[in-house]
Image: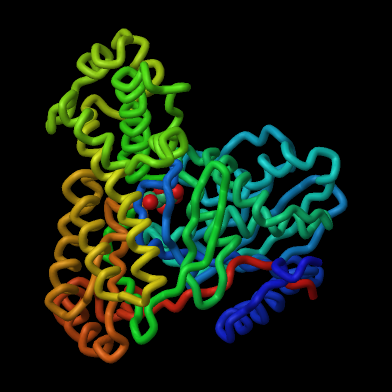
Length: 452
Ligand code: GLA
């Protein structure tokens, strides 16, 4: 087995794995053959850039999905979960698997299985018994769902003794995850698979490229949950998908604006960087500003701008929304890509304060131009700045979920006391543990397989 695929387990994960192996034997009645691990991630900078083909800067966290597994002789896949609220699911491995109802946790397993069946064909013959154990908070913007897809994919491959390079999987699994109806990019799966302990990653897309970036010495990343659930397959889905469509529409506007100078039409905003490698992305904003108002446009207005009929456009966009804030979305995406480049430079220079300022600027852009913040996230950000964070921003898709805050290590205890007192105390029940809602994360290694 290639070294990279051998799982590295933290002490806590070792305990979880050992318990999982016992529970597997007790639940399924046979011994587990392997345990796979796929971590969640926190994105440090570069929000809503991945599906635009522009870079991100995340790191893997020490919260993960573990799956204990044993192969079966038929093509049945049975998926159990140590958490009772996720009931058992059974389905048959094939390249066309009908989904469960919207929001059902079993769809993440089916998403991985269907895509691998398509990709691996006859190599993937065996079904399997899976027992899942996850400790990534769901709806927190920490990629619990992508970690579940990655873990299911690794588990199914292990059950069939098939190996695929992690880079291949990192490109394949974002496509797989569209099964649940979100038009997500590839950051989450790539981070879960390719992360390196002690480092953040700069990830570029189409084609996927990953390089390690140092994190500031003497500083900690503290992640705080706003207590607003932002489930990828739930309410946040429509807001997310609308942003993806808005960005595609910006490409269509640019196609018309730049037509004479474009060798081909734009698929993503990132194509600008490919087609004009020596031109800063922000150079394209003035022509968009001259063409587009600040306010959202109606479908009819967008159709007129890009030279199509409203009916046609409605068919292409589906029912994601009726108002399209094209200029604001473009301003966020193009400036965020520029911030990722500057952030990488700051981190390589060990300049935590410069990195913190870029985090702040990213948050303002996510709030004002991408409009993915919410009052609870804003309250947490204001508190964090008062409590000494050198940078604070929402992380992940937004619409709820978490903030990520950069702090000198020595300031972390005082920071937590203030956040606990002013944010969590009035909101959490006595029985709830505040430690389940805010975390200090160090960068962890990516996914792996542990043969027993
Ligand atoms: C979600 C998606 C990612 C990415 C982020 C926003 O986590 O799964 O692909 O688009 O939102 O940066």
